[in-house]
Length: 545
Image (cartoon, rainbow, N blue to C red; front, top):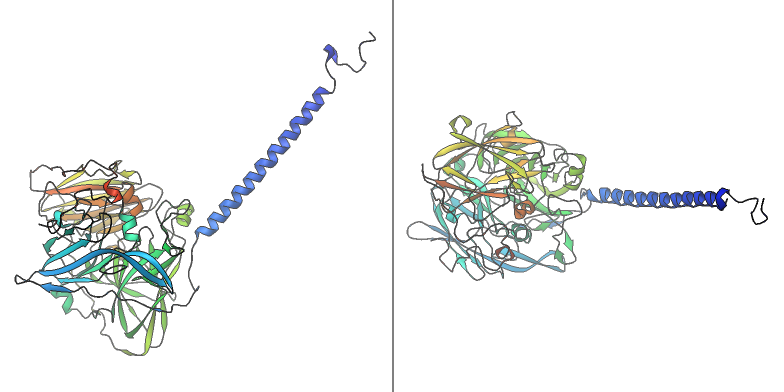
């Protein structure tokens, strides 16, 4: 062996220790990377656990309900010589003190937040002068009202800043709890969340004869429910991580009142429930599971009272319930967790696991006796499936309805005046949606192939459509015909609506083709959505003529 060759030399002259060193380095690298992966996994797991825990909200028992419930005032009106009832509404910015000493910037009608309750009789002609005192364009939609498309107040009837729109129509539908709110394309969620909403109650002779509680603000209470979250003095509007349904607040208000109570003096109390939240769905009931009677839905009274202990309302839906109270008791209206949001993920991040104390009823020590509810109410004026002359299908996805996002210049469906149709609504999108149709009150024919539950048997204009649900609806379109001015159908989770989950239909005479809405370039035109007077802002005094 050469003296220049080490006895420890590897064959070929390599370092005999190189292999073990490299193996050691590889093991160390694997250990370090493994530790980093484990640390990252623990961090992600911890973050997810925190997100999962924080996503569940409950206000049950957290604070006393010590604020008297504000009752929206009846709107003032005048009656013209021809019998037309005239209302005045003004959209305006202001400040509202929801919490003592804290002023929050808000919007309202004829005030700083929400609006007065409009009221009219069936057969009465009405005119509403709507002035826009805001710095951006908006509109006012009469949710649930049967009226001409040009008076509907959708995104085609925008009111520019400083302008006035004056829709007019004849009330031609049964007594009902309706409401009004803005409907600007791409901006509806923001405008409603800031406070632009109010009730529009309709009366008729049939309902007047029924022994139902009907003294407004006494035994007949408006209950406009919204969820809110405060960011300092501001109303927050940001969505939480993974909240794909839209904005979800961490507390509720009724009629703009936090932690409200109402002292009542009658044995039976009628609650006109309106879900005016932009994305949250509620399941209303009482902690002792007492039964209450559902007497009305979106479009008016039901055929007969239905006794239940929960009623679920998605955004835009209404329910009229009558509850019995005992002298001296306090009973809480509560929203309970719900299990029909899809999977556990959707329930947790879509608000299905949440619970809220909503409104405390404080019964006086002595109560006025109330007459019992009649066994029969009124027969709803909604069509039946066998009257339908055709059917249509609507597939609900967050990206659009039937695969198409909203286009202001496109008519999606054309229906013939005087006909009845069956619309099949399907949601396989993995998240909750709902479905609202302008102008009509419809009958829910079936839900997943079965007869609808009692809460869906009355006249409806909005329905909750959870993931995995297929509904059939019977709708009658009585006009008037207008081939150029569309009505909307859309998801009333307003974040989804603003994203484009909306379509348009026109009512035409038999054989008449659909026209084209003038002056609209489509969903991607964001100028008017930002509130710069686009989308046909109406000049002062000419919008409804």
